[in-house]
Image (tube, rainbow, N blue to C red):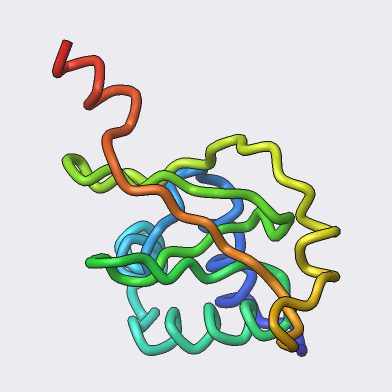
Length: 126
């Protein structure tokens, strides 16, 4: 993948947050400083970064795709109230799971997403 200033800005935007931003969030964050940037450019570069394995795309229920710079296997919690997406630590032997075959199928990767309330929303309920 060739160097591009726009791609670098987009990668920085994903890398500098733990919010798991959407393409629109990234676009809004960069647009003020780079007014010539288009949303199509953001999507195109996010796709290229995902294809290269530099970032990870999260396809979540009832939400636009989110992006994560942490490409190591890990789980997420999607808050049904505020919409936050956070990393959660769930002890699973990922390497063993992806190396196994189940019913004749080969697993290449596994993604686990939990849906419920984040710590802040759960605290407000108490």
